[in-house]
Each structure stands twice: as structure tokens, then as C-alpha cells.
Amino acid sequence: MSSSTQPPRRRRYASPTCPARSSSIRAVASGDAVVAPSVTRRLLGAFLRYLPDPGSGPGTGAPPEAKTLASREREILTEVAAGLSNAEIAARLVLAEATVKTHVGRMLSKLHLRDRVQAVVYAYEHGLVRPGAGP
Image (cartoon, rainbow, N blue to C red; front, side, top):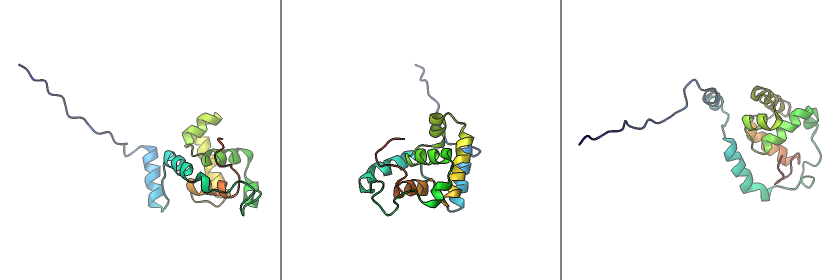
């Protein structure tokens, strides 16, 4: 009887040179948080009922800094607020992922926000997106 032994299973990890891993490490090292879009979606799902309806909270109307956004940047903000990743936004809007990253960076800069999580909170607090409404 010959017993065939199978090689041990190897665990797969992201390569140290993986761009997503490198940017995540740099973000954490600079004091920012890294939250997966899927986690953002679950958080929104859990807290949607506690968010005010647009127009009923303290942020009625678009704040002055939101008016500085280009139409594409505002569109990107609504997609980010929906919890989509850059790749998902790129596919939905038929853009290159690098273009989406550029728009996200400019939007964060214009709104004086640190990261995507702050962008989601900003969009909901100022009534720029409606709870439960898909992009």
C-alpha cells in the first residue's frame, strides 16, 4: 500500500509590496484608521435609523465647503457614503481607479476631512445623502 501524502496547505498573505497593503500601513502609521468598505456598509446598516432625515438636522442645506466640490467630486462623495470601495466606484462610474482616488483625495481636501469614514459622517450629517437611499 502506498500512502500518498499531500503537501501542507500554505496560507496566503498579501505580498509586502501589495499597493493596498502598503497604503494601509502608511495610513495607520500616520495616525489614520483603515476601515474596509464592507465594514462601513454594516455600520451604516446598523445606525441608519438613528440618523436624521435630510433637511431636519442642524446641517440643513449644503454647507459652504460642499459647494466648492466639482459635480464629479460630489458624485464620488455619495458613492463613498454608500460604502463603496474605489474599485466599485470606478466600475459603477466607468472611471479608472486612479481617477477615483484622485477625486476622493480632492474631495477630502476641499471638505477638510481626514479619511473616508469622516466623509461618510459628513455626507449624512449635512443631508447630502439620504439614509437608506442607494447611490
